[in-house]
Every structure is written in structure tokens, then in C-alpha cells.
Length: 253
Image (cartoon, rainbow, N blue to C red; front, side, top):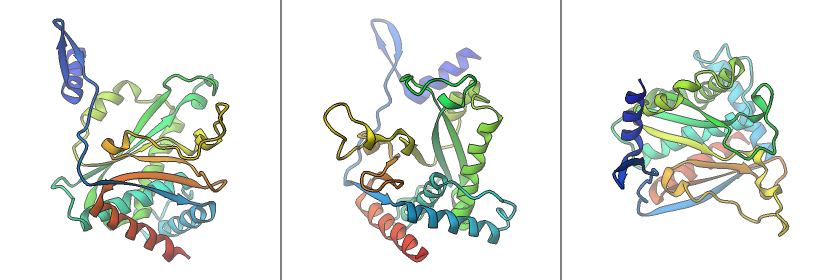
């Protein structure tokens, strides 16, 4: 089993020989041309309206009619962004032939362990949760279905934050290829409240999303209680995403 796992890891990350010994390479994604970066800000009022609207969608859809718990703001924003991104990809003609789409959320395990690990612990204590869906069905189902899928995966944490962790990495390597939206960062980290003696930061960015395509989610730099997130897309896809994203939010008013 260990040999099989190492073979999968080798195919996933690649390896190189150094002085006759094999070692894993750091994954590196090629930087695509014509990419642009944008920051989207959602204040507390918009987040609340989006939450309430999605909860209303639960009652209209057969797949979500039994959903009695409203989504969190984080789930609402991630679900809305996921659907807008899939629609923008199709509108811009960037959609690939694979009909699978994946949403990847990294969860901070520190406070969820028993006993909990102090917040001052700076080591790696996160685990991934993955949602896999049929792209066409998800777009048809809309934001309500996306929010339920993400919410259900988060609620799995209540059964044990480390449940299934033994197969987590191998499971990720076996997921079908498709459009992946992963979330980097978290509003809970309070990036804009951090002060190392030079004052609070004016702008916080995650450089790696240029290559990974993740959304960098963070607390708002301007509005208390709001969220910011950054995306990097090619110019055509970004134009389509911006139009869909703000048209949808404006309709909530």
C-alpha cells in the first residue's frame, strides 16, 4: 500500500534524481499569458443579503427543500463565486471537455481538536475538504445547490475533524480532472489587523494564485465585518466574471 501511495504521489508532484536519490519536486504551474488580477469587496450588508437570498433558493429547489439551516456568509460567498466562475468560463469559451468541477476548502483544525491547539501555534494544522460535482448539473441547480454541497461537506467536520484524514492525500490525487476552485486564506486570520511594528498593512495579496487559480479570501481592508477576495483569470474570462458577479449582486437590491 505504501508503494502504491508513493507511486501516486510521484505522478501527482513529479520527482527528480539528486546524487542518485529520488526527491519530490515542488509543484509548479506554468504562468498563463494575458492574466489579470482583481479584488472583490463584499461588505457585511451584501453578505447578509446573499445569505438570505440563497436560503430562499433552498425552498424553491427540490434538491435543497429540506435544508433548514441557512448558509454562513463564507459558504454563501464561495458558492456564489463558484457558480459565477463556471458561467464566466462557459461564456468566455474557456470550458474544457471534462464535465467535472471541484471546490477545495482548507479548514483550520487548531480549535477543533480535542484538546485544542493554541492559536499561537504557527505550524501547519489544516486539512482539505473537497466537493466534486457535475458542472452542467451544478450550473442548472444554481447557487443554492452549490451552497448546500459546500455546507454539507463542512458539517462533516462535526463527525471528527480528522475523520478520513488517513486517505486524504491519496483521495485528492484520485479526484477526476476538472475546473478546480480552491480557497486560500480565511477572513478569520485577520490579515489587516496584523501589526509587526510597522503599522497595519494597506494591501495583502497571495502571489501563488497567479498560477493556482485559487480565490484568496480575507477580511476586508476597508469595511469592518466585510470580506475581500482576489482572483486571477485571463482577460476575457475576467470580463465575463465581473459582469455576472455584479449583475447578480445588484439584482439582490
